[in-house]
Length: 303
Ligand SMILES: *[C@@H]1O[C@H](CO)[C@@H](O)[C@H](O)[C@H]1NC(C)=O
Ligand SMILES: *[C@@H]1O[C@H](CO)[C@@H](O)[C@H](O)[C@H]1NC(C)=O
Image 1 (cartoon, rainbow, N blue to C red):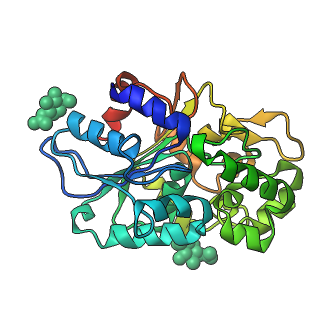
Image 2: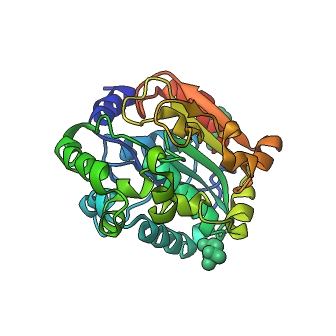
């Protein structure tokens, strides 16, 4: 079976994550950290394991670390549903700071929710420095809906969906349900801003933390990949940092049209002007891409 076929097979049933770190590979490439998506873990041979292997084949000598949050791959998968995201980010920051191979900096690639989690790492943990951040189907303005859950997790998703629709912003659900921490209800903007423990914080909804801004702006490139036939993320424009216009749930706005950008609370407008933001789109459903596409569009940022 080809890697793409295996990926599709797996991705139909789940999503991805990775992490990496070390000194430069034989081609001078920086270490690469991967963070998987919901329902996935660090090491599944059909998902992150395959991606890690593929990158190692393409970039000779590269050090790739696929992040495991917890003590085992199974715990890592569970934590992707139930562990406080702020704690996950701290866990990862600590791990990165302890890895001598990352001292000279690293690139980071997040899959689905791993994309926004790694952005939090960039904003909160400048040491060691992240150089390029590549978000593959990440939801930088969150989601308002969970239309489809990756494969085998579907029973968990039915339960999660119910919780999100009724009590996403209760303290208990915020603390214990990962997806609630990037649940962004445009009809209840005040609740979101006030009670979202993770996303509203990293998106500077409760005030501007200059440190977040400075750290994000020190990225060399922030690459965002959107899947044109995405049936998992709602709204899909969140993968490019756009969202639903506040107060309604139909019309969307681009990042450039948003208050976040116009007020430049995160430095994204400045980064955009400096050519640091890269918006990529690809055919396919959530996290489905070919090796050919990956090699042509993504590898240049990690070589
Ligand atoms: C370095 O990268 C180039 C371009 O991808 C590749 O063709 C070459 O084999 C690599 N060389 C080494 C030593 O990794
Ligand atoms: C801003 O973010 C930094 C990095 O996470 C944190 O240490 C600091 O406490 C934050 N400042 C405020 C005012 O929240």
